[in-house]
Image (cartoon, rainbow over all chains, first blue to last red; front, side):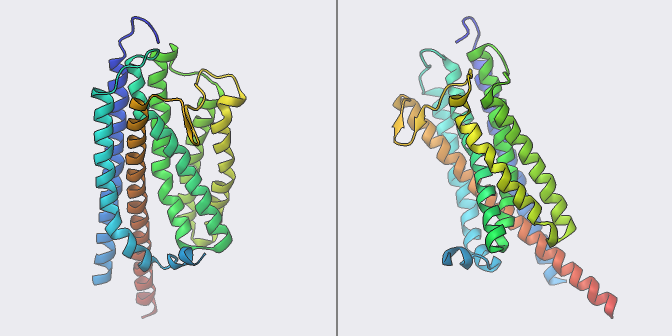
Length: 46
Length: 246
């Protein structure tokens, strides 16, 4: 451990990247799937 | 082999994947939120590493899934090459984006952890360098898979061969801390044995299971996306050919 260095900014930075990145990945994949399935359904109806 | 071939039919696969995708994402998300909250608020500071030890609950699952993602790609590539399973290539492609993300998250959180723990953001030792190589392998795989999907079915063996050959890096990452001198600590958890205190171990296990469920949900969502795209493209192409014939 490095004495005199406040660890909390490092902890918050790591958690923020993990949480925001994971939420972004899940949202991108979920909406990409919904969009692709809607496009497939539209092409079926035409 | 029978259960594997049963899912060669996309319709049968979708009957299983549709009801599983959202529950995996929801349960995984709740488990990750609970374990990260516990790790941030309730887990104690560690004697040597202080409060920075809390980064463990993101860094270790990210490392596990970065390596696990490529292992999945290698297994799916093997199945694609040997049995020509139609969903194996799609599964491998679907695992590449979340795998690359978790490999990058492992590198970034490791670098952030390295500053308070080692006094440096980065060292070119075996563990960090081989993990960086894994991230570059993911980028190369994604580029190859994208090119293969545009060129048609005949090229799809190239990403599969690359996925299989790239798996040689996985044992290198795992054993790097034993083979070479490194600032990175050796594994704290091995099969049947843990040197980690229970207050860290259980939170870490919950976070790892939660992130793994999220990974599974994302892979299913991306497989459904690729399948839907392929079906829409095939339908449009067929219609264009019918219009040209008429």
